[in-house]
Amino acid sequence: MRIRSVVLVALLSPAIAFAVKPDKPGCKDHALFPTRMPNYYIAACEAKEFASWPFKLQKGRTRMVEGKYTFLTYAVDDRKDDQTGEAVVRNYENALKKIGGTVADSVPNWWINGSVVVDGKEVWAEAERGNGKIWLRIVEKQEMVQHVVADAASFRDGLKANGHVAVEGIYFDTGKSVVKPESTPALQEVAKLLSADPSLKLWVVGHTDSVGQIDANMALSKARAEAVVAALTTTHGVAPARLKGYGVGPLSPVAPNDAEDGRAKNRRVELVKQ
Image (cartoon, rainbow, N blue to C red; front, side, top):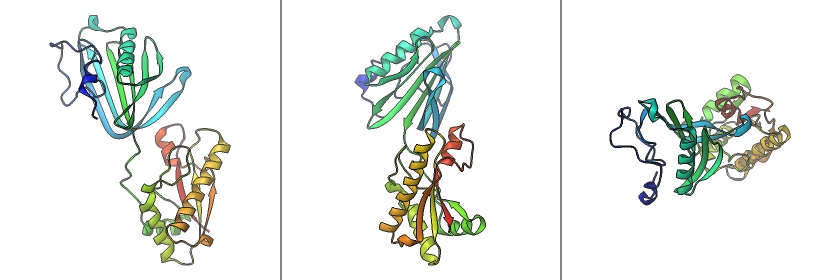
């Protein structure tokens, strides 16, 4: 992540030269907040190319953000150096604002989160104060890179074995029904499946998670299924009579909807043999 150095120097109060303990090997400050509260060291760190985190909202609500995930745990060796919740929240609030960010929500003596756009990417950050610790979570918002895309043969085998098969690699923006360009490899494989068996007819079925109103999810899942049908017939040469799109919203989950990994599995497009 590239952020102008002239901005960086204006962030959190710099650490003193002689920390009580060194940072855990392999850990370092995130580029978004390259300095830290005085006398804190990095006790633990975690980085994932893709994960999700439920950023806090008041009244027990959360806002799920997906992307490149960084988790840093700052700690003090001597509790007399522990900063107050007010100081931690105010420091991160000011730091975020100085780089053009916006505070989303906070509890003044406990936690704060918000977002900023860096190099065209939306980045979310949350700082939380604990006893002798500060937990900092940052998610650089982005779509997951889909490394596994099923092919025509696996679609054929799935239909033969189960009568239906999920199509990995078809993408939509959140709440939208426009098929994204990176869905092309998966759509090509569906077209190959149909080309190899001229008698095959399919229902294209859209599924959603349970977030939001059911009527809206039912409409969205149908619109997405019909968008896939349209892409296959207009761009990939499939006869319209061989496909029909339907939506079942959240009514046929394959995983629980109470966690993001389950919701991600439930947001899918399936082929069902007519």
